[in-house]
Length: 276
Image (cartoon, rainbow, N blue to C red; front, side, top):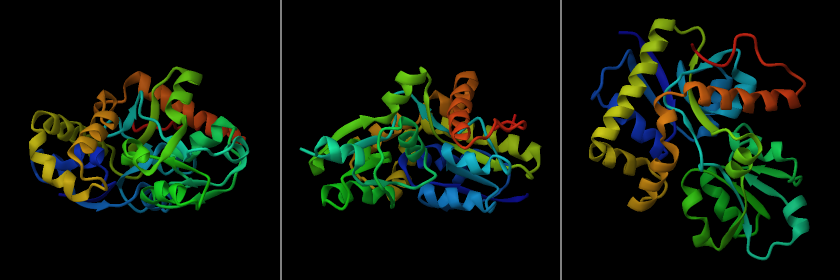
């Protein structure tokens, strides 16, 4: 059996989707070596062409689409799942427009969306997504873009929502918001890549049918251990688009990346963004 490296994040949506595949509960198309890391670290590995398969921010494809293609399964994409721009209570309008902003990585979809709004012009400071809330709460930055579990816990630190970037996207373009996806390096055998795509979908079907089996694995890697937060995270970020992007999901991804490439003066790539 061929060997392959698979990057995924430790967030509950990924560990929920991949648990069955990584634990031999559904057939794997190759001998998988998993690498769990923050999505911006995974973005960097993909930019260097290292893993055969990996979770990435959709925004990473702006620079990596020639080397990697998106699979139809495993994505974080949907409605009502966008990153949030937050601030401390009482932050004035000038600070909202020009204040410093903590971001979870330059190549994250969250940072791309913030740029596309054209509204927030302050210095951006990159950090781990799990550090953003504290950076804002402690006054290290005026604003922060939160993703993953932070969406459900920021109010506990006295922060308020300035803008839901998902709502902004949906209001502008009437499409689901593409956050992350699973990519395959374009030099990987297409039959193997297609089998991995199918295996990820089967792993998700297994997780939905027997959610209790993945519970300990998810908790072992989650930043936030509250059962309610973990359940809300999975419900928000694992959708039917995670089984198959479908026509609407592909349209949303192409539109987002088209907007990003347009800002760089580039056209949509002739090879497209998808495996098939």
